Length: 162
Image (cartoon, rainbow, N blue to C red; front, side):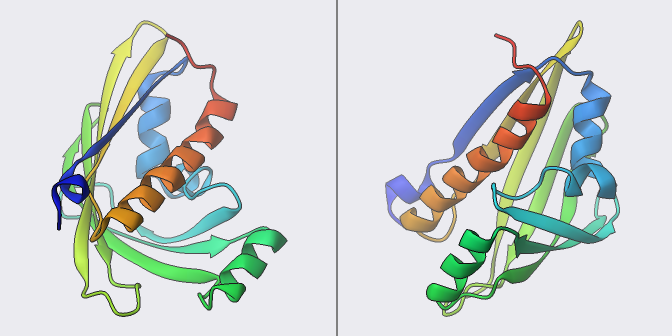
C-alpha cells in the first residue's frame, strides 16, 4: 500500500435527530436495512447482534435497473454477501464495525473497519464516521463515494444542521 491508500477518511454530519435514533440505524435490522448501501442498492440483514463480538451478516443488492445492468456489464454479481462483527460497542457513543472483505475476485480476504462516533447536543446529534482504507487506492475512493452516497439517504431523512 502506498501512503495515499493508508489515509483514513472522516465524514461528519449533524442531524436534527436524537442520538438513539441514529444509533438504532446502525444496530437494528430495521434501521440498517432502511439506509445502508449506496443509492440504487439495498441490503437484506440476516444477522444483527449488537454487542462486542456480535455478528452482522447481510447481502448488498443492486436494486435499480440501471445499477443491475451496470453490474452485469462489469461481470459482477448483482448481490454479494457481507459478514463482520461489532468490535466496539458503547451505546449511543461509539461503534466499531469490522467487515470481512472476502467477495472481491483475485483479492486476498482482509478486514475493513468503520468507526462511528455520536455527539448529542440538544435536539441534534453529530455523527463522525471514520473509514479505514481498502486494499488499494481505487477501492478506497469507491468506498468513500459509496459511503457518501448512502449517507445521502440520511440527509434526505433528517434535517442537517451546522
